[in-house]
Structure formats: structure tokens, C-alpha cells
Length: 260
Image (cartoon, rainbow, N blue to C red; front, side, top):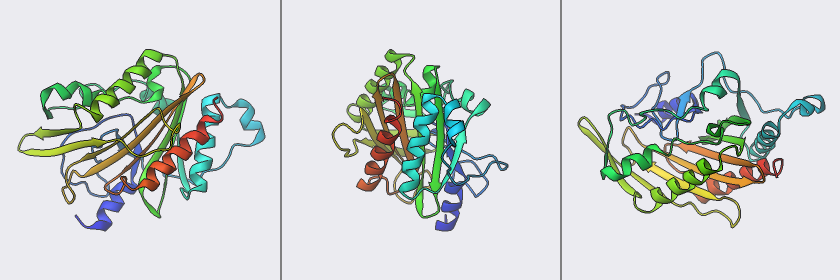
């Protein structure tokens, strides 16, 4: 696939809560990619817009989670991500339900890692309480990001997610995904983040460089007080660069300054 086509497909994406591990082929500009730690195409009527801080009157009406996300987006804008899209209404409500059967016919090898990798389909809003999310990007960086904050309404669910990430980084750090006649590697590693910047951090890579299913995702999660935040990046390549973990940590901690 030409680099321009790849960039066009990536720029059409916003983050969702779906793991999306279908081994589909290379997507065109208007075709959805199936992305782990999910990413679905933006509706054609809702393109990204430049981020703007809430007015004083609007701030009085925002929830703590919304204020936290706005703070994270402000940091993202300062780091060069000049386009953002708020996820709200029915779209946000739909993210509160964890996707079912997200592997959808994909065979995980070894099989004992199947449940673990499917459990990566977690995000803060799935705890069912107060939550907010905004996606962000820029034409200058080949990655799409998301900042999400929610009230910890289900602490066991949060602890379970931490356990899932730990298992992905240990017993399931090198696995294979097979569907029909195609098999691709799926590997994980712990990104380098400053002490205290994240309670949980994972960088996963699907497929080899040059393969149609090539995908990377970087996910940092941290709790503070009664809230938990998550910052994610997706890209075809390059998320193993230390700058992405550094930016994710700065955005996450900026968001949580409004929650702690």
C-alpha cells in the first residue's frame, strides 16, 4: 500500500473501545480498519476540529471527568495535536458496553492467551459511572490519540484490567493471531515512563513491518482519587519511540490534575 494511502486511512480514524482483531486486508481511504484497542472511522459528518477550552460558564456545568479530559486535551494541543473531537451522547454511551466476541473467528496461539487478549477491550467508561473522552490528532504526527477519564465506580474491574495488562506483558507477550489462511504475530512490551506517571502501561504491536495488518498501540492508565484516566495512541509504526510514552504521560497527568 502506498504511504499516502496509509496516512489517509489513519487520518480517518478515531478511537473506540473495540479491540477489533479481525485479520482484514489493507483498508482504503474510506474503508474501516480493524484495530486492536480499537479505532473506528469518524462519521463523515463529524470531522475533527481544533480544540478549544471551555468558557467560564461552560466550566461550571462540566463534570469532573469532562474538566479532566479538557485539561488533557489542552496539554495535547500544547504538544502539537491541533485537532480534537469530543465523544459524547449515544456514541459515548455505546462505549460503556464492552464489545462481545471481539476476536470474531481469530484463533489465538497459544490458546490460553485468548481470554487475556480479549480482556484488553477495557476502557474507563466501561465502569458505568461518570465519564468523558476526546480523541485528538495532527497532520504533522502519524498517530491518533485519545484521552478518557471516568469515576471509579467499579474498583475490582480496574484492578482486573491491571492484571490483564500484566499477563499480556509476561505470559502472553509473544503470541500469534490466525484467521483462515493468515497468521500474524502480536507482541507486547512495557513502554518506558517516568516513575509515577502511570499505574499501567503497555505497547503492543500487531504484524510485521510492511504487512497489511501492521498496527501499534500505546496505552497508559492511572488512577488518582476517585477517578481513573487513560491515554492511548495508535499508529502503523513508531510508537516505540520514547517521545510517545513521554507525551502520553504528560497528557494523562495533566488530565488527572483536575480529578485528584
